[in-house]
Length: 258
Figure 1 (tube, rainbow, N blue to C red):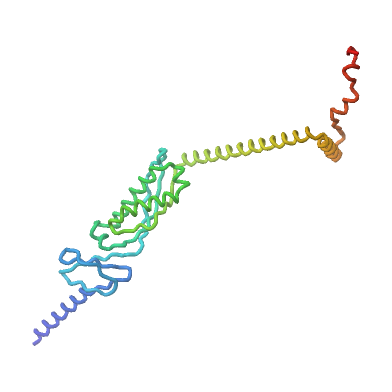
Figure 2: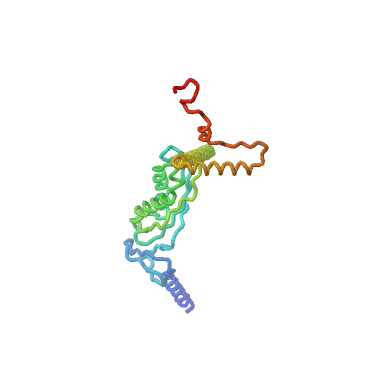
């Protein structure tokens, strides 16, 4: 009798273990890819599902957004400048079946693809573009990665270039270039100001030559400015026209014709 009891208890434990092993719970962000005797059957979840032992196998897939930190890559730009670039990639699985069947390890595959794409895309641009057009490069990287991972059931949501590191010699060269650019702009602004001032002086001279009264007003204004100066020496500017009345006419000069 006791032996039969042990047999029944053993059978009950085995059945209970099989039931526990058969029942699986998948969270809201998880899906289970079910294989029946090695062949794909269906995708289940979330919630409580049944997986028949031995006959069926299940692979869990997380559908949440994954943050992938791309390791630092050595990139040679189109103008032959060596830089170190790293980035971060945001992606998520949108098709659990393809993510498991079409690629052996979609996480490793996405990481390697992100590294090679980062080097190839940035190598087609010059250093100035890497530093000034980072948003455009992010969009290009995201588009290329998304196109290549679509066959794996993966959606690349965003790509962000974090750092573009240069060596010390290149940093000094860029600083000198920026300083030279600032000096060039300053000279252009100065020359433009002088050109505009010369044009205004020419306009003023034309107006005064056409209107003698304006010249007289300018003369009086100059006298007023001189009177306000606290100096011991006062210089009175006299128009040359005042001396015309004092000078003899050509016919009255000695040696002139009658």
